[in-house]
Image 1 (tube, helix red, strand yellow):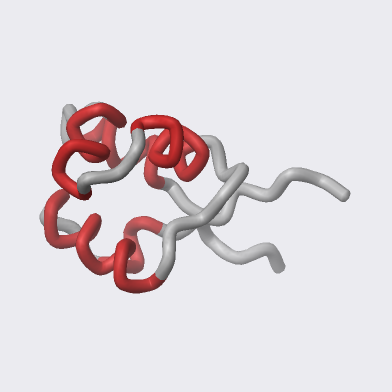
Image 2 (spheres, one colour):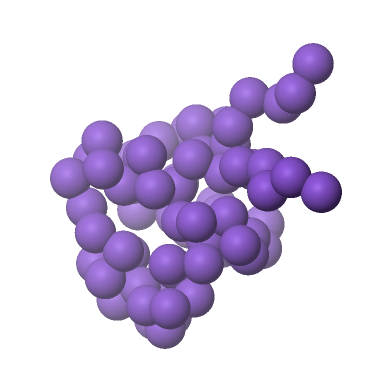
Length: 69
């Protein structure tokens, strides 16, 4: 099974000039957890995604990759 990119968190963080460490501190999460989200080896929960969108000042949809056809 291929590793599909579900979220664009790494890209959005780069666009906003923010780091994984910054996001981990804002969310009071372990930096390793945020790293897993950024590499799509794990996904944040819905409530966390809402918080991330607010912190990064983006619409929640911007955090997701386009679905496959």
